[in-house]
Length: 519
Image (cartoon, rainbow, N blue to C red; front, side, top):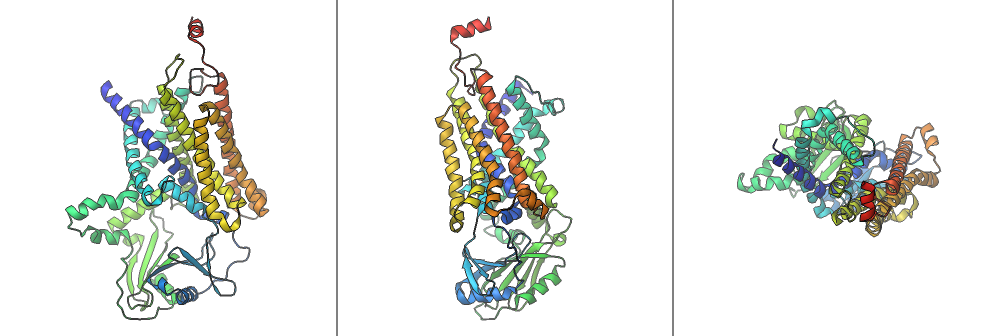
């Protein structure tokens, strides 16, 4: 390859990586946490000691519809599960359940810890209305960075793949780690760049074909591949709902082995009322989500969507979703995705550090201002995200119970923007040392806060068979140790490293001293 062509690919890889890197760090770090969405739901809201009675869903449905007739248009029922044992009916962002005496009560979710971190994953903290589209564009840039990185690194792939040259040359060590992680996890990153762009921008990408090629009929053609059924039109004829238990029997008859998780109702009380039942089939396939659609008044079967009868479009979309969210293969896949997700966050962090080192002018007293600004932005955004996520976990256990969702969200933003301001107010080496120590303290405090709040320590939780509490404590402790070790390394480099670096805490020697040292 010509040197000019190689330089072009290096420039593309560098600048695209820098533009997308900040959002991708937040997306990967938060995404690694939300892989355990169901398990962490049990951590954020401890399960009741006495199991909730298994009630007929129709009792809850009738009680809600009687108290709130507007709910007839559209509502859904979340069936009890291992980590969320209560049956809940939701409509218009309102939540209802039956208390121990069978009386209807409206309630607010006690905590939104996992849901908030999940929003960070697909918005990077930007407003939800347009943040997801920004992340979709970022995923396209991410794919471009991956392609250019492979072209740059391919000629030395086998030679340097497992090289990690630890020594005085810090830049080469970070380069080796960056290249090795990037290449070894390349299939994972290609999948995420592709699936992220499709899931975030799919409708927008279809728009030109919808209006220019298919005369406005494309969505009608692909609709059955996107959802189990389109919402029906009301017939305008009153008809009572069939008993929910009877409908569930029909669902299990149509899809044997389905583990029903959600019931979606449209136009309850109308002759065209519809119920869509969704659940996992527990099959050895990447996409194992099944759906059964019934007329909710007559019980007539309308559609069955199962892995073995997926259309090509449905199989593609559901498999892409399963690959993106790691919702197959149980815990082995989740932990693999977790390690790869954290490694991906490191990839973007290390990429920025390499750019800073590449911009450094050796043996010059005054370094480019761009290097210092990038160092400060990298520290503020990346470590601000780490500290903010830890703060959300702490708020869940330490904040007033009635206002947890507000405290959780505000805790993240307070730590994130506080770290960002601190990074720009302090020299990079000082800020890095202080913010990494802050991340270590906050992360280590997570299992301690849980212990203080519940009285359940990680060892006792393990004895009682609660692997979630123990798992969170172990991961938090390991990450706290990692941040503490990184803080020590930054401080050591600041004191004894190259005085011309933006990471130095030593005053740079004068020109005359530099000449004498060179001599």
